[in-house]
Amino acid sequence: MTTRFAFYGRVSTEDQQDPTSSKQWQVSRAQALIEPHGGVIVAEFFDIGQSRSLPWKRRPEALALLEALKDPRRGFGAIVIGEPARAFSGNQFGLTFPVLVHHNVELWVPEVGGKIDPGSDAHDLIMSLYGGMSKGERNRIKVRVKSSMAAQAQHEGRFLGGRPPYGYVLADAGAHPNPSKAADGKRLRRLEIDPTAAPVVQRIFADYIAGKGYFAIAQDLTRDGFPSPSAHDPARNRHRDTRSWSKIAVKSILQNPRYVGRQVWNRQRRDEVLVDVEDVAAGYESRMRWNDASEWVWSAEDVHAAIISPEEFTKAQAQMAAGMHRPGVTKQRRSNRTYVLSGRVHCALCGLRMQGNGNHNANHYRCKFSSERAPIPGVDHPKNVYVRESAIVPKLDEWIGTLFDPANLDETCASLAVAGGATEADHARIDAAERKLADCDSRLTKYRQALDAGADPVVVAGWMSEVQGERLRAEQEIVAAQPAGRVTAEQVRSLVESISDLASALAEADPKLKQQVYEELGISVTYDPDRRVAKLESRPQIAWAKVCVGGGT
Image 1 (cartoon, rainbow, N blue to C red):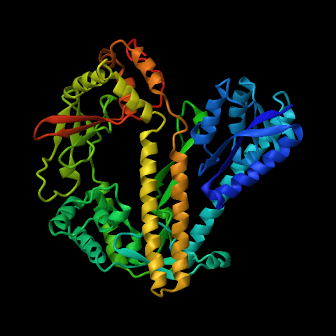
Image 2 (image 1 turned 45 degrees about the horizontal axis):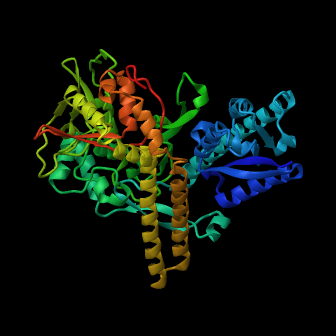
Image 3 (image 1 turned 120 degrees about the vertical axis):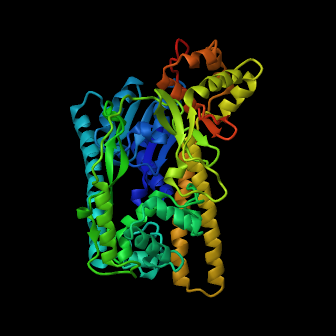
């Protein structure tokens, strides 16, 4: 009798191997286990670029497999895994296996020679052991990498990657010291002075030490026509406003110690924090946090040309520290407000998001562009732009209601069906990856032209190898961001028709649920303070779920 299996596997970017090859050997190992028992793989679920630390519900393919279990017509009655250390980390087996048992689906792994017996303590112990080993392996890799990078920064002064600080450009620093990487064309990089931006950095430090504040410096640089860091390198800053200098940009430059000519590493760290403290099974997410200056790792010697002197940097840091410790009064937060349009209201004058702000005991949205960034030439932006939430939301709810009235229902349901299954984050990931692909193709074309023109083949091969790696990761990102499935127009209509009066239901909904509805509908509001008009748009990103909105569902 033939047993139909679904295969699950995973490869992460940490593995530094071809995802196709990784999948092939994991599938081969799984087939070697089940074929003597008459097993055949009829469905494959393979996560690419997903860390083993993520629980199954946060891995796209693993989540799709869990969702498939709920379908009695799924077409398979067992799951086979070629490498359990790639599938389960920490306590993930203990959280996932009971779900398989509930749906009467077997789990086969090579380490137990077949299917896992739900009643076997030995099998449970073996799988828990592999989960612990997987977690421990990941932690050991992190420790080794961190220790190695600290040594390279301190003793070799090596540039360890990332974009160069404003004021510098990257230059070739010779072949990679690892022979195998050097054979692949990989090269080291070092920082060299950017003749256009370096004088601006010197001016910023001089002005700050002379007593000017961040905002005053930003104003002067914008007025005098100096491009901001994002305008100076627009290819890497497509998501940033390039029209003027901001206080944050000035402050970041003043805080960067690499301008004194030494390599500095470990200014930031990546912490893993619980996604939901009430639900540990949801796992962790990474957060970047700043380390104290005492934890920074400095190169023993100068390794690149300095833009400012150590004395200037020390003096600037002392002034910043004095400003940070000025006495002040901490205001107590009076209430926990819910802004139902948080992150969805934009200012028509500058295009930036307007922040939630409580004013006169009512929710408002405020744009304080002019207090954060230097004025943009030709744009007359007030110091603060306010719009009251209650002036937008009732009209918004009424407009949403009209989208689902009989005259518009067919068109709306069709639009939502197309949007269903892909989130705004998915679309953003795909767009960013497609831009990356285009950038990589453009760079590869230029490198081939350089090669034809007689450039050093070893140097060009190193450049091309790096770009091809970036291109592969971008392609993988597009695949990973694709939605696993779509909802149909009929499913949308069924859900919508269960709500007798959508506008009334939204008006009476709890603010937090209302916020969720706006998020799923992809609501965007652009407020024009000159005309006092709010433009409403909806770009649905429906991931269908039922929520209670004042009696409706």
